[in-house]
Amino acid sequence: MRYQYGSDGGSVVTDAAGNAVVGRPGAVWTARTGGSQVTDLLTLAGTATGGTITTDSRGRIAFQGPDGVTATLWWDGGDGTRWAILPTETDRIARGQVETYGVLASTVGEPGGPASLDPTGHLEQDQLPDLSASYLARPAGGQSGDALLRGPSGAPYWGRVTSGTVSPWAALEQQAAPRWIAHRGGALLAPENTIEAVRMASALAADAVEIDVYRTPDGGLFCMHDTTVDRTSNLVGTTSSLTVPGALRGRIDAGTWFANTWPSDLRIPLFADVLAEAGNTIPIIVHCNNAGSGAAAVAEIQRQELDASTLIMAWNETELAAARAAGIPSLLLDSDGVLSGQTYAGLLAAGTQYLGVDYSQASNATIEAAAAAGLRVMVFTVNRRSDCAALPTNGSVWAVISDDPWYVRSGQTMRSGDLYTAQTWYHGMQGITDGAGYRGFFQALGWYGLDTSGTALASNGGYVSCLQGYLGPLPSTFTLDLDFLFDVVDYTTASMQVTLTVGDREYDDDTTGTVARPNGYNVLVRGNGTLDIYKVTGGTATQIATASTATVPTGSTQHLRIQMTATQIIVTRTNIAAPNSVTATDSTYRGGLYPHLGVRDTKTRFAHLAVT
Image (tube, rainbow, N blue to C red):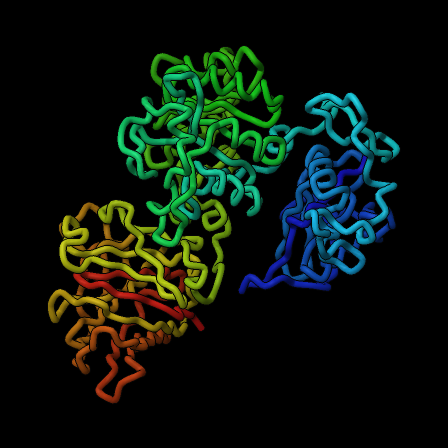
């Protein structure tokens, strides 16, 4: 049996700017580095490729792998980067074919493929491809849970998913460590624990998605993390007192708390909704948060026949009991990984093979010891590349759980400019602890802003900042340009700041805060026009250059340019006449810097942030 790789159109090759790379031939390998080249490959039409796979008109990769191979394969277009391509599970192939009237997703919009709908919303009959080789009508009397399978000869048939079929969780097991798990669906990029977050995690090809469930007093299960509903919805009260009708009441606002531009009609999903949406398309880790939620989650998983797609996770073994009895994988959470009243061998003997530890509390030695004992260790919640780099690299970390795994896993510059026009968070945009999770706001026409004017966030000395991680790490020499606009300035020396730090750790300019300041440089533009450059070493900021320029008028777009040469940092307000610049001679920190935007007692907007 040959599995289809990239046949759902999800494997797309892009350049550094995020644009699809089309018409590029490449070879397929068995590993990310090293390994052996795979040549026994066919096109989706069954034609031999000779081992060369060329990206299509949308930059997609699609082919049939060798017989019986279900592991991740790697495509190399000759530039030294290998792209992971996952096999498409048989039930996912079925879903894509049936729900689009027998059309492979990879053919939609292509020459000869469907391009329009008839008045009833169905695909035009004359645009449907030949389905004889890839589609079978569901037989009369078929059972719920049937899937379109392929026999040893490649012929399709409807049948039950069996032990011989690779399930989502089994496929996850076959991947190389570490796997990358989207925490709460990817909580830095979409409202956590919503259907939209789960869809995003699947669309961005996370290895698995983690969600939280609470059991309601009326016996239902809905998706929520906190013990109160206040933070992530417009409701008020304890999470354990919410009912199923309460969760379904109207369309609760579970979106605008996340960002001012998200819609106000996102609801808190029921657990059954999430399973129906994503079941058998992506492995799902279910964090059971209160008494009885573990057994209720297992019951719903079994009702939807998704035992082979899920894992049950909890802070106590009581909530894991139902999963153990059902043969569903289970994970015990323990912050430092040392365990209390239990041993690694005892945990395995009880039927739990996975252990979840906090990266900030569990030592590397503990992680390695748990892995050596036979446990699969998942590390949570890792959101910064600096923290990920400190984890063991010997395979003892089975998976990394992150609110933004796409940013953390790459380690490379993702873009050279902002995507503020999308009006929501992009990869690597993270606030500071003392800012209470505040990351700013968006406005139309590509403006992003931060606000500490008046009494906003006065508890942190009127300062907040937000990492722009997608631009880092920066090269040794570069030019950074941005537009900025002061909406409100509380006093003449209040400022907007561009900070360049060694690594992507958070930066807090409030010296009374709890955040340690990493080494680097901090550039301040004050309301009175003063330009300051500070050098930060060991948490202490020292002014290394200052200059007076014209007062910055509120409500007026300004342009700032920061040039990093081998020996100098040059800061210029390019839209005003001289004096408009300040230069500091210093070469201490070069290469690997990350930019942050910050404000002290101002409301400031930014646009057109770019690095060259």
